[in-house]
Length: 201
Image 1: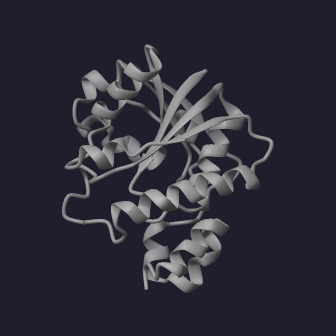
Image 2: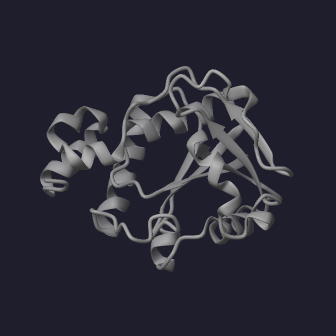
C-alpha cells in the first residue's frame, strides 16, 4: 500500500483535519496513513502548544476512532504515531520521513500539506533532500483560490494537487480562543475529551 504522512500540532485535531485525510484517501491511491503530532514545529518555536503532548496524542487517537464512524466507506489503515513526541525538540519533517521510509521499505511517501504551506516549502529543514523522498499531496485550503491547479511548486518536486470539493473553515486557533462556540468543529470523541479534561478554557 502507498504510504502518506499527515503531521501537525493538532492542538486540537478537528474535523478539518479529518476531512483532509478523507480527501486523500478517497481521491488518491494512498491507503496507509500515519498521523503524527509534532513535538515542536520548526516554524512555531516561540509558540508552545496549549495542550500537553499526552492530551494532543489522546485527541488524535480519539479523532481517528471517530473518523471510522464519519467516513465508514474509507478503506484505509491509519497509524497514530508518537515518534516525534518521543524524539522531542524541534520536529523536522525530513527526520520523520526517513523513519517512515525505513519502516515501510518504500522509495517515497506522500506528504499531506495545505496549499498555505507552499510559499514556505523551500525554507523547510533539509528541503533539497526532502523533495527526493516525498510526493507532496497538496490540498486546497485557501478559499476562493481559483488558480489552485496552476499553483507553482518548487522546482524538482513531485506532487499531486488535490482540489477538494469544499474548503474546511475550521481553525485550531479559533477553537482554542473560543472553545464553546467552536465545539461543533470537533469530532464527538475529541469534543468529550476537551470538556472532560477542561482544555482550552
